[in-house]
Length: 159
Image (cartoon, rainbow, N blue to C red; front, side, top):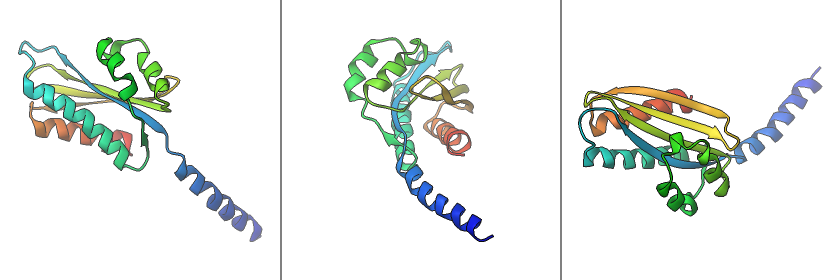
């Protein structure tokens, strides 16, 4: 009778270190800005957008769940091409080019200075969506953008 629990414990002892050592390698392509409001895009919004991408990359790395892929080899092609959210799968090619198992990207849509939403997609290198989530934020401030990303990560990605 004791052989079954011991065998199960041994199987877990062997499996857990292997699973922990195999973090997916993720390419983080940051965020695009979709301004559907009548107000023009401000320099502050452009700065927030870049900061959001950095914060996403840092949060994924510090979570201990991912290894971050270096996206520098595809940065020029990415900058010259269409927005990653509407490029019909180019993110998969970029991800494979940098040896990623997963790809993360997002966009912020500005409806007005009061209503914005942050969208985040994480998919595997074959295009299967692992996370596709959105959060509405109120107010166009550093604090509201940061809070929105933290909420998405805490409540949707890291749960």
